[in-house]
Every structure is written in C-alpha cells, then in structure tokens.
Length: 331
Image (spheres, rainbow, N blue to C red):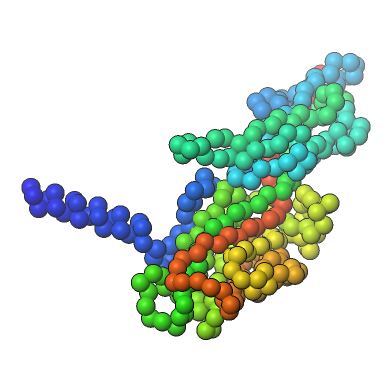
C-alpha cells in the first residue's frame, strides 16, 4: 500500500515539474488569455428569414412580409469599435424581394463589440452581441408571381477589423556563447500565448546570431477558416475584397521587445517594413507563413534573465453564413 502511495506522489511531482518546465516542441498556451480561434460569430435568428415564404400571387395583393436578422457576437479578445464591422446581405435579386436600393442591404455595427475577458476569479465574461436587421427600413416581400416554387439563398457576409496579441519570452545571457543554462538556454523553443482570434503565432524559437545578438523565428497560422486581409490605408478598413491580391492573405506584424533603441530589432521576411524595422506585412501561403527578427543587444545592460516580449497581428476578417428561403407559388 505504501509503495502505491509513493508511486502516485512521484507521478504527481513529475507531472507538476513537466508542466512548469518549457520543453522542445511545446504547443501554444493561453496563459492569462481566454484563448480561442474566432473573432466574430454570425447567426440568423430563428425564422428571420423564414424557411418558407410565398409569392405575390396572381393579384399581386397578398404579400408575405418578413425580415432577416443576423446576430453578431464578439467571441474573441479584441474590441471592435462602432463601424469596425460591415455586414452585407446578398445571394438574391433585391428588387424581387421589394428592395430597390442595395444600400438597404449593407450595415455597420452601431455598438462597441466588447471583447471576451476574464474577471479576477478567472470566470469568462462574454463579449457584446448585436442584432442587425435587414432591410434597414421596411420588410422583404416577394413581388413576383411564380409559376413554380423557387429556393433563394440569403448570405450574410461580415468584414471586420481584428487583432491578435501574442506574448512570449527571450533568454538573455551576458555571454551568449556560454554553455551555462542555469537561468535559461538562449537556443530553443519559447512558450507562446495568443489572445482569442482567427490568426495565431503558433511557435517562437530563439537562436544565437552573434556575440551581441539573438534571432527569433516566428511561425504564423490561420486558426480558423475565415478569409484574412490587410489594407495599409486605415480609411479603407475594414476591406475584404477577394479580387484584391495586394491585400488578401496578409497580416501586419509588429514585434516589441523594449530592448535597446527601436531600431535595434530587424525583422526579415516581411514586406512594407516600417521605419523601426520591427513591423511589416506578412503574406500567408495556404494559411501559414514564417518570419524572423534579429535583436541587437549591443549597449543593452542586463543580467542572465528571461524577458517577456509582445507581438501584434492586425488584419481584416471575412466571415459568411447562409440559409435558404423557399418561395412557394400561390395558385
């Protein structure tokens, strides 16, 4: 019996030590973040639009009227300001449903879509939910007299600004060539934590790049299936045009270490690099990409230690949902 108890205690201790010790090939953690792979979720309210409607009939008098209501909920950890999300309804010919102006089928969020968060006890607070009704004014009503029943697809398409916050660590050594790893090892994988969002930095690896410099290798991946875009002109955002090859599959990256001068970090593998060399645009290929940053430590005063640094990913997200409406012929 004593041997069984001792074995259980030993296994528990090993488990705790393993959890506290960074190792090779670790998967990303959430640390203090709520985590998750989504920014905004969309949902049609029940019976809005209805699964079945009716045509105008031979008299064009009795018209079945309805609305389409989309529930927009922020389930990630970035707050979207009013106007930061555009929602469009498409997939059918508007005039057939009594809508003369296409502007009636595009709207923006009017509320601040607050991010998901944790309270002091670790309980998760839901993000803001807003319901958007189409058309802006009035109601839909099928205006044609059909000969046979027809099915129409109502597609809700959202385009919204979002951002990922990432936290990781750098191992600092007075002698980067030293084999002493008592405090930390300047070569190896680093723990990485992401806020809840559709794009993540999934891996960070540190290596020695010289007597006074280290290199950080980053791996970035889409966490979900949404389309990702980035447009440099802030007045045009959010913008999600799949025909725009200069913005599709792009994210803006900003790495902040707070070590030395702003120009002491130089990131490679980015386009349109910023003046500080720590930011630029990353082009995703099949939803993933890598880049590296060289951190110059010359003139930086420190002792052997582990320092936290941050990275931010900025982008626009395109999400869609759809439902079918069967319009029945009234004889």
